[in-house]
Amino acid sequence: MKTLAVLGATGSIGVNTLEIVAAFPERYRVAALAAGSNLALLRQQVRRFRPQLVSVANQAMAQELRQSLAGEKVEVLAGVEGACACARLAGVDLVVSAIVGAAGLLPTLAAIDAGIDVALANKETLVTAGALVMRAVADNGVRLLPIDSEHSAIFQSIAGQRPQDIHRLILTASGGPFRNHAPEQLTAVTPQQALAHPNWAMGPKISIDSATMMNKGLEVIEARWLFAMPAERIAVQVHPQSIVHSMVEYVDGSVLAQLGLPDMKTPIAYALAWPERLPLALPRLDLCRMADLSFCAPDLQRFPCLALAYQALAVDESACVVLNAVNEVAVEAFLSGAIRFTDIARLIDRMLQRHGGGGLATVEEVLALDAQCRRQAREQIAFLV
Image (cartoon, rainbow, N blue to C red):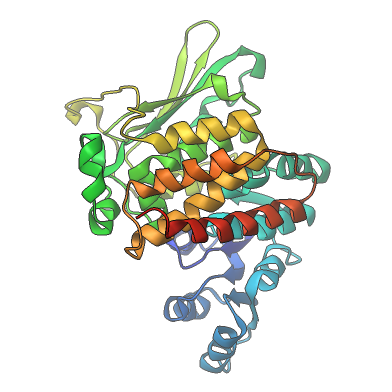
């Protein structure tokens, strides 16, 4: 029996994780759930999985949840402190880190510092503080198991191989809903169009990141830290079918890949059960019925956010903090109708050009820069019109 804490319990990854827990009750139990503001779903999850600790966005929501769960044996906390308490709860064997955005950094570090293994779906943790996080992983002797389908594919493809034999990592990308659009068409894109991903069912933030291909840029930065691979040896290829989830090319020319239908339950289950595999009741991949598996290089004119991610990674870790913070602000502004789709890349580019670089020695410095960049990005939005 493995005891879990699920951070981001009401999001897409959290919901899929709990569905796997429900399918294998003899293998998993839930001790803690951290969520944002979806109290209705969280109440259902608490009553079904009986955690001892839950956390929500703020104290007002916590009080509302306490009242609605009167009679349940559960402690309710709030804010970042509450999420961190869930992450470091005594008796937890594995923390599923699936909070969206940089908000997942402190809870993930709390789990690592407590010596608890982490199944990581929150790529922004490594984007904003990769060196600090990987140092903490080594110092505390914990495992960081990737949940992103691309990083899970690489993790599976390097199993049993020598690091020195790896030539490069190849992250695949669907290309999102606009992979065939001309760059000039993207100015008029609506949030509804951008949210309609052709292959994956995801939350709004990651759906927009996929449409801009910033998601792939963030994954490149995550892979740099997760697999200790320099950026020049991490490639991206557009693969519209989303069947090959990523590949590893070796020095002898061999390429190992992980294939499967696009369903996040597969990489989640691999992280939960590693080094074992769970017998999932999912549709099977039938390559005989696949009409085509195609690959091409990404068009950086159409997807400038991917180029900006490589640019930030080439500067230093602080530039990656800027990239991520401004992107989160820009995506929020696009979804609210305050800026156009193409303004997301424009705002990020403008803020990166203003950034002078500089080292980040502590997580406090990371968070201070993150807050400063968000504030400045919001100020700059008025000048994009």
